[in-house]
Image (cartoon, rainbow, N blue to C red; front, side, top):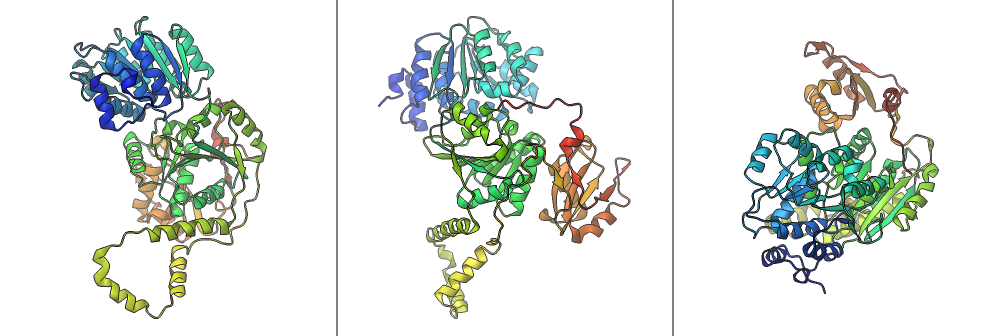
Length: 554
């Protein structure tokens, strides 16, 4: 078995390896580390997210830089703040035994002056997001003119996020004779262009198959109607009661809608998208990592940089525009040697795209049928029984046990079990209709809503929106607080630029209309109106005029 010692790492780094509990190098570490230690070369390494790429470039960089020089010698570019902080933390742990090594993270959303002070004190390694680094170079707050090593981590994601021009600009400030190491999960045209333009005869290393998905991922898909995705999602969750996963949507509105529905149905879910502040995103991610949240509903941009090893499922609520995006999504499960599952919801009209994904990933996707309600219940019940059987006995309840036994002594064992089942699954619907394949021509990512389709809710228009510094969470919190309603009494909040919509149960209709009659905020009268029943509202259709639509690469 290959060991880290055989790769050529020095004593200090091997000490960190032992402390971190690394037993054997991953395939990408085994191929990359000795190569980068032995020679000065440019490198293109293609490997899935979660295969140990940070250690693959982190250990060689730490061993080769000179700790006695206070100038910046190593630069690592990453697509997001989350990944930037993660890389900084990991390399800090790798170099814990090295003296005088200073690693600084620079990223947007934090105080630029404080980051500049840390750089000025001396940082041999800088880990940065492209936007913030470009800004600091322009202000002459960071000097990368003498770096010896430059890493582009998650290069395909950085380019997908539109950082191509930023990366080109940044690289013009670096020496031509530096060693450039590019790490990417896939090799789209843009990544190949960067490699050709800024690298000199790079050695290419591929772990697995180029543009392929993780080996430990089971790829599944369900054929569903365009309006039946949520029912399909609940069926998948029901068949996997211990699910801990990500659900990917294409739009912020869809992300919010799915998260709110899941919360309403009793699941521990949260949304993460571009309308959240950085503090809100950090709070959501912290809860997700601690598994206080079972399901993270995310847009692709907001989820960039998420690195959680124990994700069991990735659900593609809608197909992404590009196959490379699907590769990144599915790569968030099946990590660290564990098995994972990637699920796709596909309409009949989009079924042909499954073959394109299979060809690109060189793997087979399994078609499954949506389970019947009784099948879902059987899985949920079995999981519930196993939880009860493995529940540790709470000894401090013993003094109260005799009273409970006395109160229940008139029931037989079968009657008690029936009561427990009825209590646990009182909301389960055995009469749910099978999924119907309707509205298949509805455009992906353009969610049309039938307002007031439900008889027990009202849909309201309010003349405040994004221009008033509201996102859906802030507006929902304001409405609940102002109307003194509970968490579940305000729902389906949709924020547009100049106005918004929200729903309440119709028993609150008079309260809502009366409360907003004479309300003035910031010298502007707040107008709330009840929408007409049966009206169909399509935000995308109404406001997309004049904007360039992103073309699918399928």
